Length: 148
Figure 1 (cartoon, helix red, strand yellow):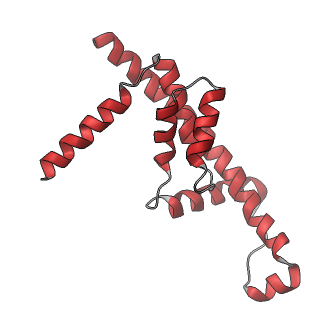
Figure 2 (cartoon, one colour; figure 1 turned 120 degrees about the vertical axis):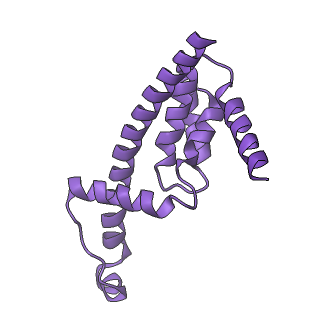
């Protein structure tokens, strides 16, 4: 059963990589998906990835697959990491000291402090991961094309 599951997974990945388009189009699609997958926009990541792939003329299916970088197993570590990266650039921000601070400061101040760091970190992480994903996949796809 494990072998069958492994074989199906390999076949699925092979089918995904053999999508139409030039290696550049496929790599751009994957990179667009990876970039959008780094943002905490649950339920909209795939749509955002496909939209961005249209803008950069990338493969839509690979863009959708690239958003899988964030999934229920990686949400917490990815967004915690993104927040920490944003905090490196914007400073630690206001610490949340519980419900009393929300009553005094209001949700806007505390929420924006967290959200601004998360979005900046997501942008930086997404850009770096997308660039790395684009470069690695383009290189691999070109090598596959030459060896075929």
